[in-house]
Image (cartoon, rainbow, N blue to C red):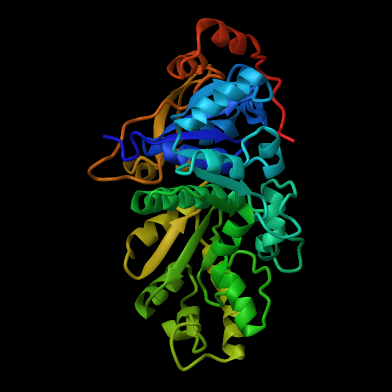
Length: 422
């Protein structure tokens, strides 16, 4: 049994923010129909660095957010294309898009017109910066939303230039916000019988993700800045530290006994008895009352952290891993994984976060799975992606179109020529 079995979603979307929301819904069992132009969604064939796969293989960004969907290749700007999309939307529960709203209006699928004809339809649109305000129609890709949101200003090392995080956190956060908005609107429709417009944005999602850091800057008047391997609003010892052979751990030491063991294992027993840091409270001055002084905070940030970094560099990664295994309660430690480690991680595989799937034109590979698991309605494994236009005939037949109309639409397909919507 699928949690969202019987819910149909029409997806007019590109890249990650829109398709990611559709992918989350498909993972929960919704019938998501991805409407692609005759050239296919542009990201279907997008090639980034070091990608030796064949031209027939999907782009890796496309691969991550389009599992479980059906693909309909359609030119919405033709009379026949408009008729197909009209019939499709008439039987849908959700229209999902991250196209700019003027583009949706030109396609004949603007909110006002559709809401008048289909009052139960959930009309969900993700934008770059929000549906109101002077930037409501500005184009956006992930790094631009990161730059505007402030997250780049707190990423990197003090004195260095701001850094764009190494993953597309804006688009993915935006897709989760859009999926949440859709689920909320569907629940509201169950209670009151009405559809409505859902508006989310990557910018808004990034601000919500940084609510602690942004609110801290407002409440205290102290605008947070880059702190390198440490959290920008948390002046304590916890953070990332390198080992002797170039590995790294995120560590936090909870009690004094573990602190002494850590210092002794790192060949610096004198650090354990240094009166500046010989209690957990001194090492983590942000915790509890009475409030620590600015001098105590500076002592941790400017002197204790470098001292711990020196300790960590005295041992190899495997030595530290063995040591931390002996102190699971007193020391929280996690080795910094790269993506090869993540793909092989038994914890990720046990929870279905990483799964093995057959990728057409590539072979069997480990890929990211679903982030949500339900105990009673877990759903079923999803096909990783549909070929461009794979379900066009099937969908059009179900909508009542004859063979001639189907042939006309399929003849328009020109894979690999897809463009970004205007």
